[in-house]
Length: 118
Image 1 (cartoon, rainbow, N blue to C red):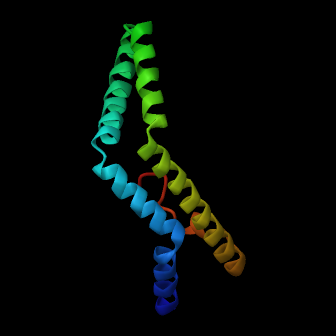
Image 2: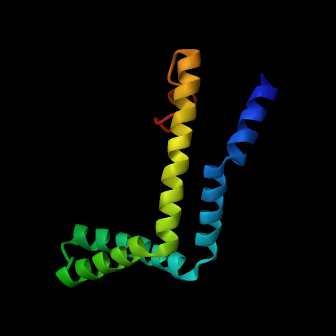
């Protein structure tokens, strides 16, 4: 059984979808602009949430956030990563469906970490 699992994992890692995802992720990790935009968005999300809770959120801050969010979403590196991630996720879903059909239960649901924080 372990050999079959190892072969499956090796085939999955060797797939074109996985290769494209790994390449896009590496490109993102080395793209200072894309990473800076992500950091700015994360920081702004935290700050805007805090200000909203305090009732101090201003319209110009929301607009700046939307502008940075749009710049992030339209960044070529980010777009390539998102697309490759979606395609790889579809492959993983197909694998789950095939395994689930074979064992007659939702494989991913059975092996997913507990959601209760246990």
